[in-house]
Length: 162
Image (cartoon, rainbow, N blue to C red; front, side, top):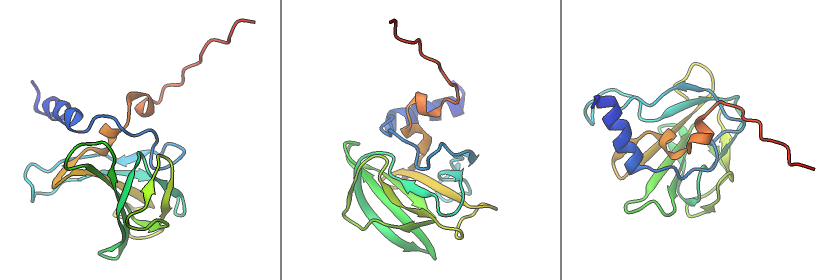
C-alpha cells in the first residue's frame, strides 16, 4: 500500500467525520493543504490554510467546549475540544482570530468563535490556519468533514411530483 494512502486511511480511523460545517462560510478555497512532517520536529504544515478576507466570521465546525481563547506568539488563537471524539478528545485550532468566545464556553456547529484577523497569518493574504490534534498528534482537519462538504459537485434533485 502506498505510504500516503496508508496515512490517509489511518487518519480517517483516528478522526472520523464529525464536522457539519466549514469554519468559514461560504466554503473557502484551501490555499495550502496539510503536509505532515516526517518526524515530530521536522518542517511541515500541521493544518490547512483557508483563504478569506479579514473580518470574516470564524465558526466552530462541531460541538465542543472552548479550551483556549487568547494570544499565542502575538496571534489570536481559539481551540475547541470536540464533544464525543474519545479520550483524549480531538481539538481544533483556529488562527489568527479575534476571539468572541472565552475558555469554558460550550459551542455548537456554525457558532461564531471570532473573526479572521487581518495580520498574524503565515499566508501572503489573509487566511485562516485550521488545525486538528489528538493530544500531541497533529491530524488533517479536512478528515473531520464528511464527503458531501468536501465535494465541489452541484447536484440537482428531482422535483416532487404534483
